Amino acid sequence: MNDPYKTLGVAKTATEAEIKKAFRALAKKHHPDAHPGDEKAKQRFQELSAAYDVVGDKVKRAKFDAGEIDASGNPRGFDPRAYGQQGGFRGNPFGGGAPQGDRDFLFSWGAGGDEAQGFNAEDIFSEILGGRGARGARQPRVAKGEDFQLAVTVAFAEAIQGGTRRVVLANGEQIDVRIPPGLKEGQQIRVKGRGGAGRGGGPNGDVLIQAHIAAHPFITRDGNDLKLDLPVTLKEAVLGGKVPVPALSGTVNLTIPPNSNSGAVLRLKGKGVPGTTNAKEGAGDLYVRLVVSLPDKPDADLKRFAEGWQAAYDPRARMR
Image 1 (cartoon, rainbow, N blue to C red):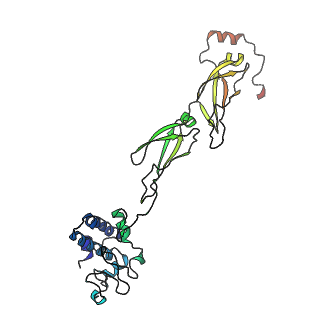
Image 2: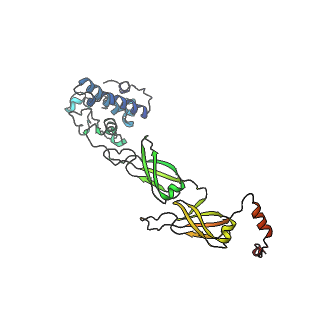
Image 3: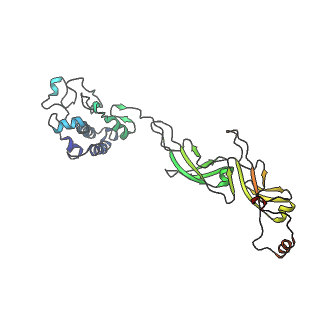
């Protein structure tokens, strides 16, 4: 029999990984299933299998390098005919022979050899043939597909009100993802079954999206409530009236009571984060804090008013 190293095209100093890589490539190229009816391909594949049976196993390789066994994996000087075997069969002279037939390139299972080292050539064949191992048809291992993970930044209003966002997956596929109303910072969105393909009939993986929420220019969130500072004129604060408030759901008219001061907080019920039925939470509210604001350049009327106004109160009395 040929030198197993030469059969696999590797040096005697090759690592286990290099030997396995060489065998995988040659086995895939010469496997009988890829060459139906080609006896030469079958013979070549048997030679590759036999070679890998010896040098692909750590224990057998050491024995072969030390001259204890031959290229067939049998003890030096062993005559298989003395055990009723056909020439060239690599059975175990000290136990039961390996099964023959279509798969006469099967590996022997001698004590201290293949299985003792966890060596399983069928796993290699399963990878090469998509589940068809060296012992014939077999079912591949069932495994869930890979989960795809990505992060997206969601606009503040979109996070509160919900929407749809198109994302690009690791495999290049584009999908539309539903943004649930009331999305929170760091919350994970799971899209089931749109990840990597499952193996052996297993389920597909999922898409896991980590959400980051962009800041709003003048609205902040506190649980299910929203808050904003609303600038008002001096006249609106003193006399009161209705003023527009830019809520996320659209402009809302807010009634300001007369004599309202800066810092006064008014509530717009139900104008916060929408309620979620699954969490049994009601909608939040929008809290509006009034901020009396003067113009950057006061006009003549405002100046005359201020000059003629005799303030009858001390706004800093509480600081004394």
